[in-house]
Image (cartoon, rainbow, N blue to C red; front, side, top):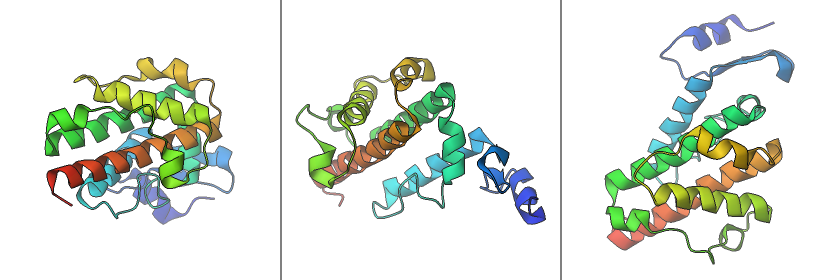
Amino acid sequence: MYGEAAVREFLDPWHPRASVEGGRPERVFVDPERVLDNITLALHRFDVDIDSPPAFDPDTVTVNELSVMLEDPDRAAVLVSHLVNVVVQLMVARYPEALVRFPLPDTYDLRDVDGLAIGDREHDLARTILNQRLATGADLGPDDLVERLRPLGPGGQVHLLVALCRMYRHKLLALKHHTGTC
């Protein structure tokens, strides 16, 4: 069934393991708070080292953990709001707020910059959500996002999350370049 060591790690509050998996996805036990903590830690690492693995690297969040988080629109909204709130908090703490708050322009297309193969809806929604959070000093809550995320299937939500992480990377690179901290 489950490895004894994996269960001990999962039950240990100081270990980053966020799930225990059986042989099938329906037998996955996930601690959503720990998933969010692991993503936060990855975003902090990324803030310090732009070449570190992204927030959705398999060492940070497993595919099954992500599947569990995205199968419910409310949990997906918690994940997305957490992600954008953390990235904006990190940028505001390190860079001039006026530069951080500058929105991604309508002409910004991640697909042209990174060659990322995602649809218009996911791309535009990611840019809109990030710009919405950049425009305000208040965190976005899951209730602000859940209805916008509902039409996306799990694949679309994954594309949205990847787009948000890549947009964060581009914004971070621009801030580092502009402030001379590259």
